[in-house]
Image: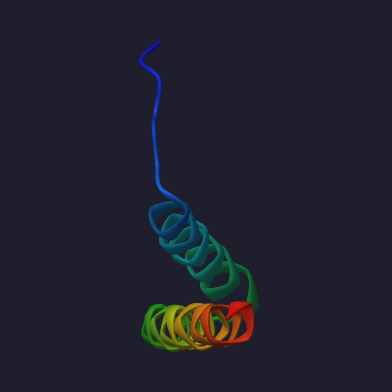
Length: 61
């Protein structure tokens, strides 16, 4: 089995994508609602990733 070598950013985006898809599938009833909710949740995750990374960057010094 090939080894995956992901950076921290790539792993965070992959986590956000997979989590958003799962949340969209299990929380909504129609396909349209599922896609919209998954896209919205993914957007929130990406904003949180960038926001927290900037806070860590600025706080580190």
